[in-house]
Amino acid sequence: MATNLAIDPGILERAVQVSGERTKKAAVTKALQEFIARREQRRVAELFGKFEWDASFDYKAERSRGK
Image (tube, rainbow, N blue to C red):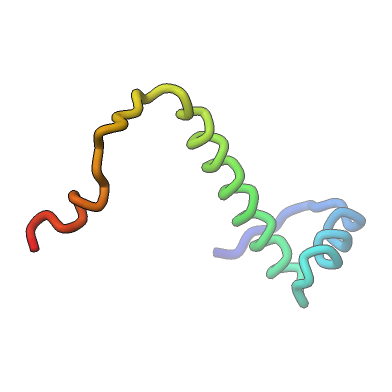
């Protein structure tokens, strides 16, 4: 999908440099992927402490179920 964006040239050039990508498009794509991953990780981290831990749960026994 073609998109026209007005991106600060200094920020874009810096993104290309630090990303190690060869093109502006690749640098922007990588930056967006990392942004999304970081936000998704934050949502997972917010769940810590909200579930009760069952110390008796045997994950190895669950793996062999159905074999």
